[in-house]
Every structure is written in structure tokens, then in C-alpha cells.
Length: 273
Image: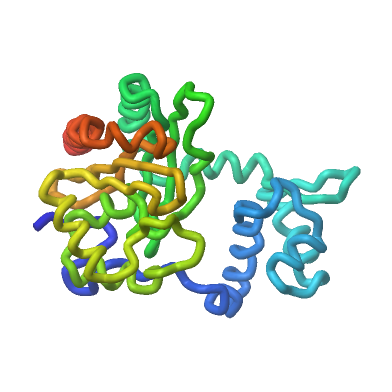
């Protein structure tokens, strides 16, 4: 059975990212949480010292010192009029070199081709801890389309990209990754709610080679996914197409095989690049 890049034969799948308490236990962790605050959903692109302190539940003086150091390094910038901070150009430069650039370079034309053929939004996601993390997106020209997903994480069991990332995992590895998210708040009405239903669903999807999530992550959102693998069978990423259920749900059986072929094409290119 193929392995996933985030698993090892000895230790099983990667565990969830360190929680807030773990990050707060070290100076580096505290700095990391400050930077991550600028990408959290529910926050604007620019934050004042007070807003960051409130968002993180920390003392204002401590946060102020860290923000000044990060600004001095160029990772953050401060607006001299509003005194608010935002991510700096040095962070933008670093972000451009993040992740597997070969994967992104090969996947981008594939995303554009999928958008042209399906007229829906196409995305690339990778496994980050116990979440599906979206790293690339090609938008459709439809007036109603899937939202701005880049940088967003989603529970693995309730989205097509997440189950595509787990498609070749053992039942035990799947259970280790998703057990904490079952019956989580804020999911769609059709999200699987038991481990048995997740395992059964993945087995069915494994047999056909692609995953389908209709009203699972969000009510009114449908997505179809397939895994991108290495030459050794490791799952590197998931490619998926997303759109409104009202438009996309009736086409998933036709889009699925196209997505599998696209994923295989990218996988083959990854193997020889």
C-alpha cells in the first residue's frame, strides 16, 4: 500500500501541530504565534499592538516588544500613521520560497487546465499536522465560486482534499488523524460523524480513485479531490475542484475521472522532474 509523506513506518502519521500551550512555552514559540496571528481568520491584514495582545491573550507590553523586534527584522512593517503592524516584504520574499516549489510549478498549469475544463475553482492542498492546508488556488470566472482558501486549514475527514490526502493510509493512521475532529462545530450538515463512517467512506473512494464531499465542510459547498503521489507512492498533495453544491454536485461523477488523470499527470511529472 502506498505511503503518505507525512507518515513513517515506525511512528505512523504526523501528529497535530503543537497547541497554544506548547508554543507559549518557549520564546521562539511565542514569536511564532504573533506572526501566525496576522494570518488567522477573523483578523484583518493590519493589527495594532492591542489587537494582537487581545487576540493572543497576552500582556500588551510583551507583545509590543516582540512586534518591534519583528519589524526591525523586516518580517513585519508598521504604518506610521495608524501605528498598526502588517506582514512585511521580507516575509513575502520568504513565503515565495516556501514549500515544494517543484510541486507548485508543475501543478499550476494543471490547475489552470482544470478551471478551463470544469469552469470551477481548482486548488492544491498538503497535509499539515491533522489538517488539509491549501497552498495554491486557480479561480474560475464564475460569479459564484469557492472562497479564498489559500492559507486555510480544514478537518481532513470532512473535505475532499483531506480524504484524498488520506486515501492510501491505513485505517489506523486515518483514525489517529481525525479522531479529534469528529462531530466538530461549524461543519456542514453532511459531514461524517463517526469513525466507522469515515473509514467506510474512504474505502469506497479508494476503490474509484477520487473523493467527493457534498455539504460536508460547509453547507452549499461541493468538492472533488484526488491524490498527487511520488514515484515511491508517497502522497505529496491533493488536487481538488470546488464550487457551489447547486452547480457542481450533479457533475462530480464526470469531474472525478478527469481529476484522477490530472493528478496522475502531475505525479508522473514529479517523478521525473
